[in-house]
Length: 278
Picture 1: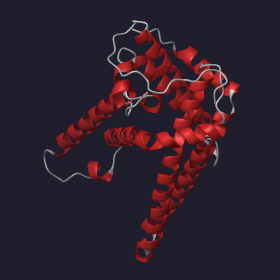
Picture 2: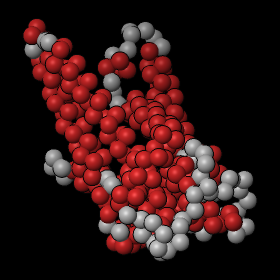
Picture 3: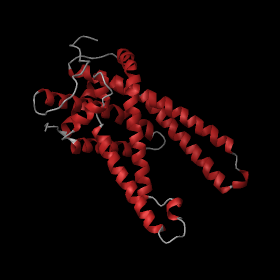
Picture 4: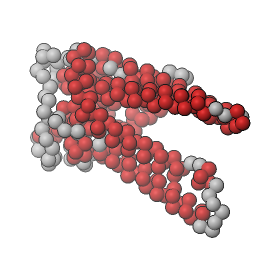
């Protein structure tokens, strides 16, 4: 098993951000769209609540328009987030070699990685949605659960449903952590990164989970800031997370190369350039 150190990975990611603060610039647009989506969701929630109070005057058109705007905002924001991920991985790769990749070059080269990177990113997002849905149904008293049909086996059925959804959440969490390193793997190798991440994380699941939890808590705390919480979270936690993932990927790859771990993983197709090459 590789000697992956959680605190060391976080400290090194912070040092990389100090060396090249432009890493943060990559995440400005994703953070803006995250804030925009939160605002649209709040507005949509207000429309739904208003329609529940005054049902007779309900008009679906405003809600449909807001919902379409939300979907469009999410798609654009998701694209920019994937693009920022690719650019950040490339910049971290250069920093690890002692060089420095310019912002324009990182965006240009990162854009070429986006089409392939979208595939694992969508997979990761789908798993996250399944997890959230499973956990929500398992612990929340939704009307369709609490107001079950008045039959004798209604309560046992509800319990089975909650247990099943809880189990789905656990499975989703396990898979999500096993695929945690798909970003750097996809950007630096000639594949989608899912298989590589699955094999690299083997034997390090709990450590990766701890790192995932640390960044999740950081994001949750910053999100509480009034109005600009989602923006600050994306702008601060985003580059931190990607830098840490890239550093962990490098360490686990190096562990494999040095014989610490037996992993059948393709060699990276894109290597960090020597210092001075941009």
